[in-house]
Amino acid sequence: MAAALLLGVSGAALVLYAVSRTWAEGEVAVRFGQQTLLSVSARGSDVTAVPGALALVGLAALVAVFAVRRTGRVLVSALLALSGAVTVATAVLGAADSSALDDDAAQASGLSDATAVEVTHTAWPWVAAAGGALLLLAGLLALAKGRDWPGMSSRYEAPGGARAPRRAARAEGQDRSADLWRALDRGEDPTDQ
Image (cartoon, rainbow, N blue to C red; front, side):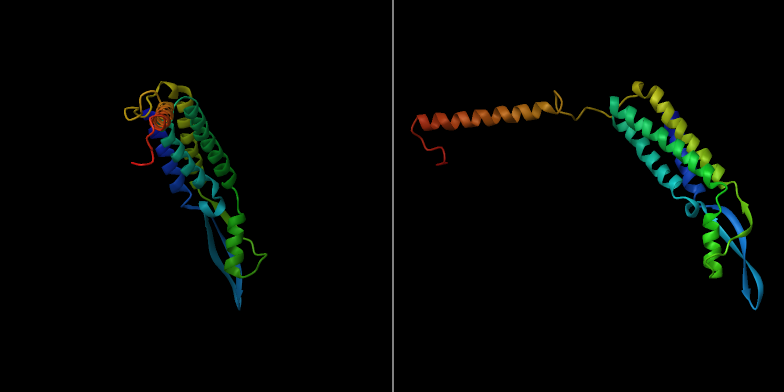
């Protein structure tokens, strides 16, 4: 259980940090009397917002794994594993993506068809993919071993589960209406209290 928690939190933190870093850099040629090269860059969140969003989903699923039991735990564990797998896939696809860099080049130059040249990609997409792999491992571990983990304490739940209070309320309502009929039979006005 501690391993899944450590893997999940580390993975999500790694992804969230990696998407805030620069994933691609390049230059765009601009003419201001003479040709000038301007540097442009794209952060991971500019390239794709999916890994960061899925890291947050993974964190929420990680917390929920410990809050639910039985089928709910299996479903939440599967969501955790799926968020990790999709994070890996989108980070790997974003590792060579230059479209966000081209958008930045077009904005910097003022020309809609401007593209970045001399593009270099950093290792941050691969760090995000590694974080997604940690989330995936946490989800798989929760799927494999989660049934044996303790759930949240049931100390404050009513005896007999959630149905017992409804049954008691229904029985109390029946007793009250029977008392009203008995009062009418005795000739008393039950509304005169």
